[in-house]
Length: 61
Image 1 (cartoon, rainbow, N blue to C red):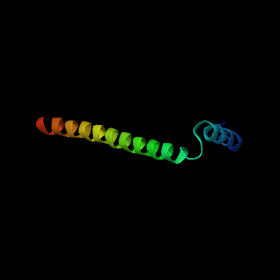
Image 2 (image 1 turned 60 degrees about the vertical axis):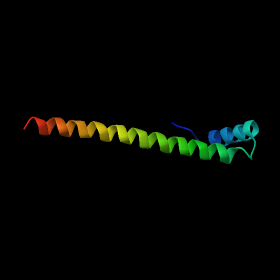
Image 3 (image 1 turned 45 degrees about the horizontal axis):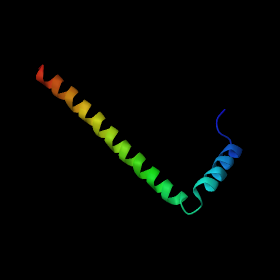
Image 4 (image 1 turned 30 degrees about the vertical axis):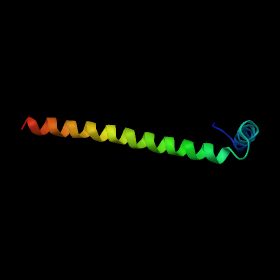
């Protein structure tokens, strides 16, 4: 199942009606920047956890 082409078209039309065609590129850019920052932050957290595990493993030897 999933979202079909018809559903995506309806969602796109509703977005254009609500926000207007001039605002959509700005909203897309803002969403992309937010997603990029979130990915970088979560990657940093995962890297920190890996570093802590490595240090804990080396201390025990």
